[in-house]
Length: 390
Image (tube, rainbow, N blue to C red; front, side, top):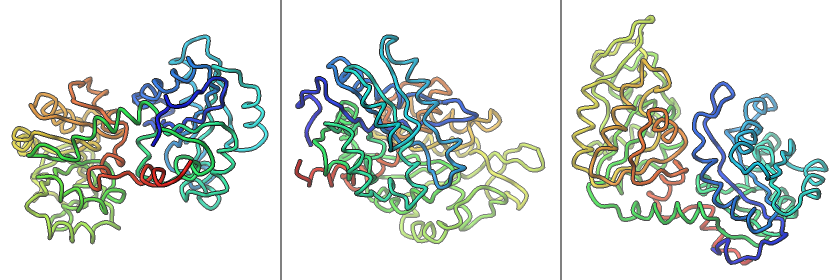
């Protein structure tokens, strides 16, 4: 794949696919690392007199109602604060049509336009997420050059990052280059190599787990993902699980029981009472929100012997200070270890920022993409682009 520096971008309309899929709560961005990380490419294009058209998705959009909470307008406001005061920044409320086209035609060299959430195109036939050719061809017609800088989405083939490359000259940006260079250590990690995996749901990660387990020495589980495995042999009460993933979890556990390390105690809520319980003491009325002190001690033993660590997701509902214990302690222990520790994904970055814990080897903007890279050594989007002639 070519690099951005191989092209003359002066007075050219350059489409940049960024990953601005940030964590937002109550209309506020919890962590803006992804936005800041995208600026190295955007500022390069501004400096070299390009007309910069930024595309990104934000969350999942299935209905018109979803649009209310999934608009990139909040990201536009943050970009206005981060870009130099003299830079004219446009926002298109549409992903196609006259408004978008007119705004682009008005742009001068050094101007920037942020287009609305590409997944607004998913409401009808999931055109974006299904890598729709017609949509990709339309988006390609808006520019002279396409730059893929959305590492966090490279494990997916979408119209805005994959099919579009069939219709326009394309290259990688500086962020993509930085991610790939820093994540190469995960292709042949120094052992012991552990993956700490958390998050609300197992659905998005369950199918890739066997490949991850083949590559790592131990997989430490927390959050709703851990609950989905714990329910196989334990009561988890009202705790969040991914019901559709339980059968797959059983299959994985039967094959990799010696590598999967699960919580042995938890912080639970029961009728507004917060308490710590061993896993075998959980009742039908309990709801697990965090790991307990015994689990932290257990996880610490594995962290201390590790040489390479990848953290994906959070292991408790850290946003609530009653349940920040596990995530905060595990991040601290990892940051103080001698291992090369890589954080991946928006939630992991947001939690580290929340606790002001910064000492890590690398903070990747991609969680799912990094898991895919560990598992296969490839990234679906880039793999296909490399097979296309431009």
